[in-house]
Length: 543
Image (cartoon, rainbow, N blue to C red; front, side):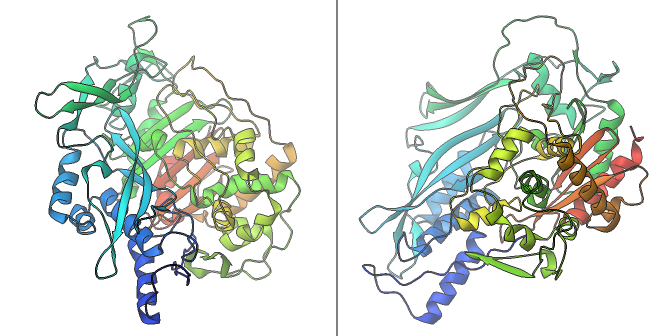
């Protein structure tokens, strides 16, 4: 994991006088604690001398963090009208079947009247349908005591929310889909609970058309629809055969995957297994089973599992070799201080050691070897990440934006910053790394493939396989070392915020199958996702 230290406002001219040193220290600490890491909130670092007051930005981030986490009284207390704010935030999602919102702050700006505005993107996962995404903004005003609060108004929750209009969810009913696994055995949500939401998405056939629904803006008094804010699913172009949908899933792998998630100890978790040689998905499992399909549609920082892609980029241009000495210090500062898990260090380590022990500081120290946009280019060109995938159900296909500054570039080297993925993406990344060729993942036969990728050179594939194997035999993935087969793996620990424990990741491959697992708030990859993958691989034969 990486560590983001306090954001400390700098002195500035043309602004109200700064407070005493003691007050400044307290404010800086409050910024970091209340808002979490700047990158976890989707914001770049701020210089108090040249941009909006960091205290205002911190207040906005803290409000969004509380709202997202369901701490509505705390969020409301950060506004100018706490009672009204709590009432509205509590009722806003009533009847909309929205799970945990994802609220991402964008670049703040000063409005010229002493106020600060922080735009944000809201991603509202609607159970069983998809994600309703919209943008809004938070107005902030300095209070008499010198603190900052969100200037409460209905429109900050959604620009069209008003005293006369609200939102309503409508679902179109579909008959339950009949689905078969790759061998023709019947699949159902009753026998495989994690497949309930997945199979529902197959109701429209291989194009993933259903189920269908919409979020409408309606008149509060009459219920009349004023406009449609978000639509989910689409009607198939042709009805076609009403028979069962044949999937790529394997009933044995699916059952083993669902049992394995019991090792997540009640935490939210997700798992994907797919075939390396063609991308066909063998298992998709989620915990809890009947809700958001986080395995395929989730958005997570992949943490150190992303070092597979970073390593590929470095190896492709000959910027490093496994036996090169790349020091692994305890800390490294690039605008902010980064550290390794448990502040470990490995003086004089080789790059091989850095990979197997997942040394953040060593990877960040190599950031100058890559151009600012090069990591994203490699991810897209060789791994298909960020291209449009047609899996058979709606999916999130990853994002690797060009870093906005040196600190964000450092974070992206270790799968943090604004790098986003999910278990489907990371299982595919693993399959590509160890085979050299990207295959679009698929859940049903006949999906369209519009991706265009280039194979990895054989020398890079050989080096990646050796590094991942060493991670099992002598590194952070030793939890898998007692299993039979030539297993390779990579762990990951992804920072979320100061209010939440880190997410734990692990990816692995054995035989012809690649797997990936994330455990929310699992603390470490080896300690949380590791037992899940150990259970899975113990239950299925090597293929």
